Length: 358
Image (spheres, rainbow, N blue to C red):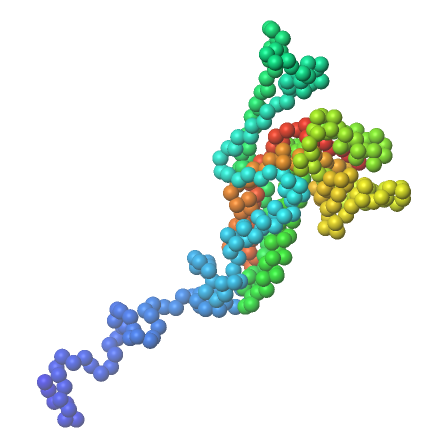
C-alpha cells in the first residue's frame, strides 16, 4: 500500500483510473445491456418488419415473430379444407363416383358378363326338372372370367399455383373470409380440371376418359329423342337396375333442354327436366349435374351412366396437398400456394356409360 499526494491510500496492484487502451475484455456486458458482438448490418431482424418488405437477409426458420398465428398459411389446414371443397364441387363425385385413397397399387377386379347361364340368355330351357342337368352331356358349362385393372394413385398429377400477396398474410387482423374465398377458388379449379380429365382424357399424361371408353350414341336429330336413346342404349345392354344413374350436362345443353318445355307446352316440365336451383336437378327422372367440364374443343357433350359407382378415382392420401413457399417469390413480396392432386381413374364396367355430342 502507498500514499498519494491527496492523502488517500491505494493498493499497489489496483488498476489505473482510466480505461486501458484496446477493446473491451472478452465476455458479455453486465445484465441489461446489448449482448456481445456488433449489431448485424441492415435492419433489425427481430421485431416488426417495414410495411410491404421483408427484413434484409433470409427469413429465419419457422413463423414470423411479428405475425399473429391466425394470419399464417397452415398447409395442413388448407389441405383438409380444399380437399373437402374439391369433393363437394366435382361433378363425378356428386353423382356417386367411388373414391379410394392409398399410396400403393389398388387392384380393381370385375366379372365379365360375356358368358351367362342359358336360363338368363333367353333359352327355352328355362325350367329344369328335378335331377336333370341344365346343360346337355358334353356341352361346356358357361363360366365368367374375372378381369383385373390396377389403380395407381400417383400415376397422374394435377397441379395449380396461386401467387398470394404478402400484404394479406401479414395483415394485423386478417379476415378468415379472405382465406376461404381463395380455398373455394382453388377447389373449383381443381374439380373442373379433374372432371375434364375423367370425362374426356386421352390417356396421354392424363387418364383415359369416359368419352374414349363408354358407348357413343349417334344423334337422331332431335334433342329429346337423343336423350331417350342414350337411356335406351344402356337398357338394351341388360342394365335393368339403374342404381346410381345420372347425367353430366353443359350449361348450354341444359338451356336447350329447358327450351323444349316451351316448344311442347302439353309436356309437363317435371317429366323432362326439373331444376333445383343449384346447378342440378332431374332429367327424364334421373339426377343431373351441370359442369363446364363436359364441353371439349368447342363441342358440348352429354354423359349418362346407369351406375356412376362403376367409375373409380384413386387419390393419394388426403386427396389434395397444399404446399406453401414464402421464399419462391421473395423479390416480389409474394407467397406461392401450390395445390397438387395425385390421382388415377378407371371404369370398372364400360358398358354402363354412354356419351353423345351435341
